[in-house]
Length: 447
Image (cartoon, rainbow, N blue to C red; front, side, top):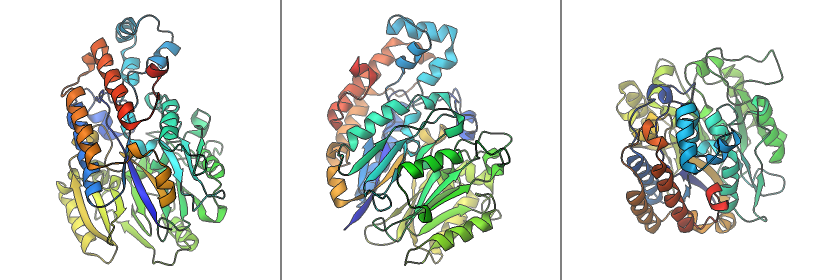
């Protein structure tokens, strides 16, 4: 049976702004208070989706969340009309307004962890929405994410949905950004690699000292149980605390995998030699396993974080070989560009490198890999997906027109208190849910 790896890219929301909310994400903090361009951000993301579609890959669209999140503000004691609440919060707690206006749901690599039906005992595709408990502005996402996932994958025979893990640091879960899968092809059973920052219950577990470890071992173990994954085909790997302190807040900032290839920095994992040995011994595929280790003298950690080299997508091309979908920052970084030229010429399946301008997302701390949630699907499972969320040339043009109609080309922190921005966002998203036939997934539609 033919399998596809469908990348569901997050559509950048109309409230895209730079607030520097993500401690540990160097780009997010560096660009705080910059003037954002939501229209450009959304069109850049759509251009990447179209390019993937034009390559012959199956591409999907993941709708943004409604912002501002008034439900959360009301939970925190703010009352009155929408306009009054915005005014009140902007005066009394502007940091809460920025958090509840975050457009971070665009990075769908953090939306959920997804397991292929080839790996799960019940032969269903499993989804667990991430609780994102480490950051307040992201911890409010799970309820809407769950509704979106169920609206997109609404077939009980093919899909199993799990609620986010209990909130709190002990089961802090950041989704697919800390999960990799190695396999012969997407339809074969894979080796699931869960990469975590530290153990919440083991005081001897190494921890970073500067920035938080966002993914806990216990969260990764819980997801493996929920998804009914084979113990022999599941490995739990600890991030190197030193690279977390260098700005590697998720594993997908330092490693990327696809089918039988993993590209990773030599300092990505704690006890790296042991990790490589474990992966090599556990992999049961028939094709040769390519573990491509990038040495520090080729690309330093700071250069990897600055260019987001490892936050590239690695995709299998329809006619053979793989392509690395990299941010244009890699092309403009001499050391990284030199390495990628050598990588393309080396004896490995990566035959093409494509660069994309995603500067609006990059300045907020997310590259090509952050923008997509990978979902392995059989032909039958693909047919069970909400077809209106699958990319087409017609949908591309419709979404571009929608963005041009509803999005601003300039957004600053002072705009967040303006009731007209809230109204613009709700009108736009109401129209989008009709276009994608998602139903009433947003709080303002359900009130």
